[in-house]
Image (cartoon, rainbow, N blue to C red; front, side):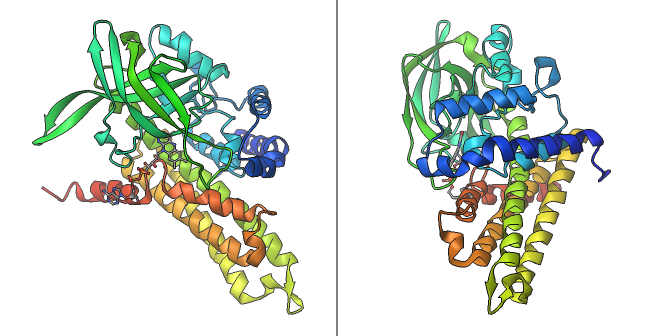
Length: 386
Ligand SMILES: Cc1cc2nc3c(=O)[nH]c(=O)nc-3n(C[C@H](O)[C@H](O)[C@H](O)COP(=O)(O)OP(=O)(O)OC[C@H]3O[C@@H](n4cnc5c(N)ncnc54)[C@H](O)[C@@H]3O)c2cc1C
């Protein structure tokens, strides 16, 4: 791997960094306090992101997206995450699984999402099926030219303002190694479709202003033309994208951790106790050294993994390692930042307690730390276990 960024990548990082500082960060405190992003602010961010060329940077050029390689995407994610998810979510990265759109789905869903005219949400998790996604109970039964969906989802991010949901439902079962498995299909379900109700979920301590929703399906009828990909092949459309998403979460964690370190360094230099800057005491300076070292390691691992994805050689275990390590480093770094700030680190007048709260979600969503360890261990042991 060449560790030197290209001039284009350096310019991209600089442009995103200044976009975050100018367009997003000034709103963070107010959004966090209000636990809401106004529709006007959301539209403003979306418009400015489109004008700046950042919108849908994760999507291929042939559909009008940024067409960036994974390493460049990870660099952008690192910069965007220096502000709460509640805000940078409006610099949208449409679900890449929309690339499975075909026929009229391309004009109805894929292209409008890339152009900022529509937004999607990804509806997989259910009250009884989180880590064990294969245990979903939402069912879709074929009736003539339609499928009829029944069941419920929860924790579905920004379903409240999405124009449609990508809904995963069981359409069949089959035997695999003596165990019953679900054949799962992905559906494109428009907001307002009869039989689908959307309700705001419980408040979350991380990323206030970024909301999750519950979705209820009660004989919700969708035409077969709304199947995304093939019937029974829902995991095939979802998995490749979910794995890549873990590397992007790792990049998000690196950015948040770097922000916590930058704030801590400044505080350690400015805050005086016993007549000296607290950073001059080894008890504090060694924390800073450890934070910086851990962040560097997480960053190298993440960028190397993104680079491997570009080479087509990344494994699921490697994506898991990046997500696991970077999210755990973020947890430690955010906690140490609070310690360095002392009492001020817990007050809602500064960003540190926000970073600390926001960090917590990263070890849970997109596959918990425990699930990443399963993926890594399975890959390590697979060739040895017969
Ligand atoms: C803010 C937020 C936004 C989200 N957005 C979305 C979204 O947009 N779309 C969507 O589909 N989902 C979304 N999710 C769901 C998220 O992906 C799940 O929360 C996550 O996969 C974990 O599932 P769970 O919360 O049900 O925990 P559980 O699966 O119940 O796990 C609970 C604990 O048990 C551990 N555990 C479970 N199984 C094992 C095992 N085999 N071995 C060891 N430990 C185990 C877990 O690691 C965890 O520590 C979101 C969640 C949150 C909180």
